[in-house]
Image 1 (cartoon, rainbow, N blue to C red):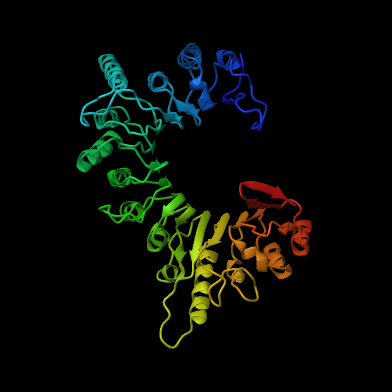
Image 2: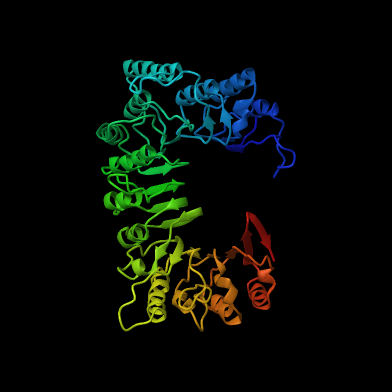
Length: 473
């Protein structure tokens, strides 16, 4: 027997894409059969794409040979619905499992979608019936009904989960749920019913994530409805991927606006990754309203727009004084009053912007980028912003806890010896410097001033991110 509590499995799929030594897929069953003390297991999704006898044996081992298993994760794959539902049934009946992450797509059933308020697919009906039967047995023996799960990401289904399955499932099976990856809901539904389902069925829900949200107003609307459903418990984190908050057809409009309106007092983490669009004021409102914020990351997609403009930053003080991680894209839009030049107004606003960041003295990780549409014109560009002579790097002197400093766009191109000496003198805990979008494809960190810093700080990692490659100098 292997006396290991955690295990991450891999196996050969593409010989040209191997990052570590994997094990042959047939040996996975042998490893699991000797891992009775395992509490955490990460499995490559293609395990579920193997032949049916193998999948059945694998699921039997999960059910019978891993009695202490608490966390189970499946990675990317496209899984046949029959196997996917078999997996869910096994996991839902596991006596110790509290964290289930099914990060894979499950193919749609061959059964057509006809009536939205009925379970049209026998897979859903069978699964729901088995859960209901299990609850009856638990009730008869005096045990708590529902599942032990505290964290759940259901498999992704392109057509979505039917309301006739999803709502009873959320209402009766997840009383302990704290984290939820929001599933896609098939067809229309009643907002009030969804709010009641979440608020009563998942009273402990405090962390939600929206993954791979397609260009569908119903999908975005369901995320907003679930945000509004958690008022009683109060959301502590929101992770959004690929959504477009510019969708003015939504009512009430805006995921970020709803987050701030309903959860400003409890939010600790907000991540908006590969965002297709977000309003500058909404981004700023997170910093202005969420006092308990510890982590705020905003990252636009390649063609997206998620910029916080200078004019929003200067309009109101930030209240997130305990924040530790901050990733922002900055824009230079400002109102220029009569009698002043744009250059004067931008300079004054920039001092305020970097001053706001510099006052967040508990920051450990800062990533700054600029609006891709902000061309290098007089009073318009960013390249000198983080210099001492022409910019506002000095405003960041109080970031004594800073460990990772990232410049997504080319703030670094105007830096020299004075700037790296500033970093050495003022950021005593700095461990990593990262730059991105190196259009010249040059070895930036081989320049003399960076070599000086590397000599002064030999343990500081200096890395360049460019088209997914990570290089060191």
